[in-house]
Image 1 (spheres, rainbow, N blue to C red):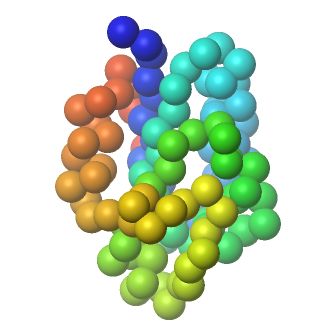
Image 2 (cartoon, rainbow, N blue to C red):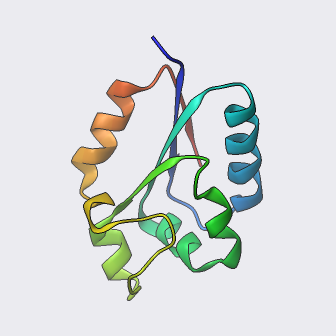
Length: 101
């Protein structure tokens, strides 16, 4: 089984740390999945957010995204990547390790 790291992001801080963790994981051959919710969806508006494209499989809480008045498109996020908290539950089950910000 391949190693997989899950990252739950509910804050609009720490994007540099998240990018750094994803780069380190990729260098070690570890797959990364990130779920952004609540204030974490605001990180999609940071120009550095696009640095995560290709480093992690990302998904967003659609309710959190819309509640902040954010608009599509988002780099690295397709329509199928907008979901509910159920997607977060799936992430927890799929991962060997899990971080929360």
